[in-house]
Image 1 (cartoon, rainbow, N blue to C red):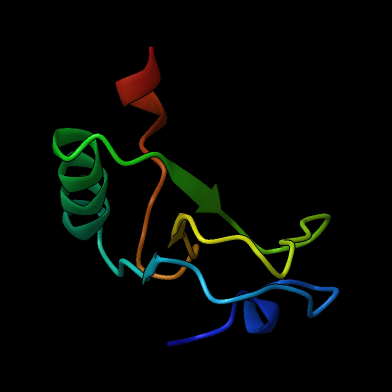
Image 2: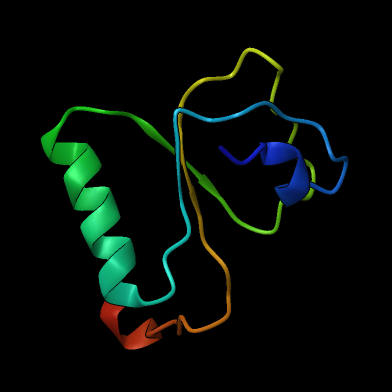
Length: 77
């Protein structure tokens, strides 16, 4: 499993229970919908700045990268 340390600017963090790296909007929707159906809380991780994960963190993480995803501001209106 991948340690979260490689995704944070301080390089601190343990292995999450699961780590999703969606590369499209649909993959992101599917990952979040799956966690919601199963009642699993998730942490959404962006660039990893100003975030520290303790060594005993064992939650589910979704890392959202700006690559491949676009913001549709009209959907928020």
